[in-house]
Length: 263
Image (cartoon, rainbow, N blue to C red; front, side, top):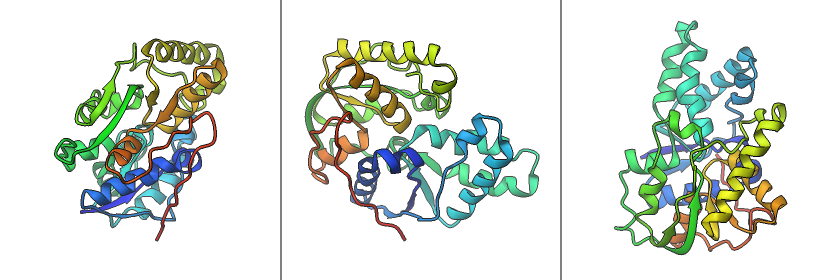
């Protein structure tokens, strides 16, 4: 199975270890993974701020870059939702291009979704083990992708992992891209609620599968003196498969960087 990694801007810049984990897990599961160097922003910041012409230009680039791939997989539910849900709307008055845009939308998957819906993995059969107490934030965009609870399905398949359900875990963390800058009086209390719920969970590790949410929540935890580690589920799975050394460094401090291979 041929898969292209759509790494996303925030993952590449701030959480490259997640991208490395995605590649290693997919390769372990028999996929041939390529990382197109030509990929750029999907256009979501422009789209959300009303610059639809600029967003369309970036969407056209995405269509060209991933035209020949069987599947496109990304560790970001936010960017996946942009491609799957918003690209077709962007081109609804551009019929000559809509078919190719829809083709990209139809073959783009968030990482967890790809494991469960396409590869249909059962991590128990792969003897994935990761001892530790975790809680998990569920990003808003997963609702648009109909992915609620999919992280739970995968966590339940990992031996040794103790999952404490986060109170109001599907409540927005307050990031929302430029929303956090435009409406700090709303964004701030939302992330404070998230920090309080993380404290209450008494978990050592917080699983956040969207880089924007991870930046926002980990920063708030750091400022509040809530000392927990932040990881993506891709990292947990890769570590549990023995594909990566277990990382002990908090997301609030220095983090290990992996190498990306492009073509």
